Length: 304
Image 1 (cartoon, rainbow, N blue to C red):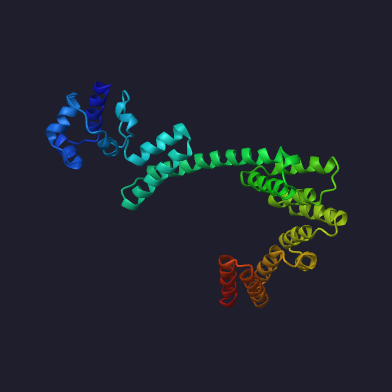
Image 2 (cartoon, rainbow, N blue to C red):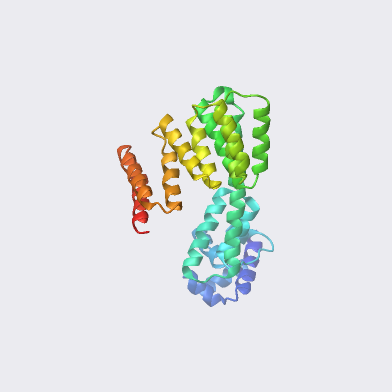
């Protein structure tokens, strides 16, 4: 093992185009010490191994592997390691090292690409893990609180939409509706699935079916308003949001939608009034940061 370690130290140093004197200077040891390590007549203190590995842009484990190669920089090595292990802790280490590298301004376009790659791989890991956790809840419907169950269902629909699986959402919800259901939220999920897919006319048609079947479902009217806004049916949109607030005056989503729509229409005085109304309500709820954002939106209306 010491022989492999010694050969690696020499080959890695040569590949990085460093002399024994330069290595010694960076590690604060003598050139003779570096020479002994490379000849197998001694080994560095274990506490020095991370520093040596970083100098040669490898991991400590790489120092003991046969045919170990030097990477352009330490971030590239950690990126390679994460691509192999796909472990979250390896992603964190690689990401931190890339951030250090970018601060130094000694990076290449390839480093940016590698950084993008590990985020891509991590996104896939997070996506799969999220679906796994959501499915564990959904599959245990009988032992899960209704509110948690349906919020999880909604979150999974949003996630599948984010990764381009809108048709799967629509297909799944259509099957549930076709089997017969007396749950308003199932209709809401189908309306939402069409909306997220950008199929606003289909969403509108299912919204009408939803409010016909569940006329007291305030959330259906919020969806209806958002859909009508996309279809530029502005009068109907405001009617829907007002109906939602009539049924549940504490539901902020309808107020947010109204404010944004007034801005879209250039009616900034009305938008300003609603943003301030929202901010005051959020303050009463102790939601300081959300209230601050609402006031920023109000200021935006003044500056238009």
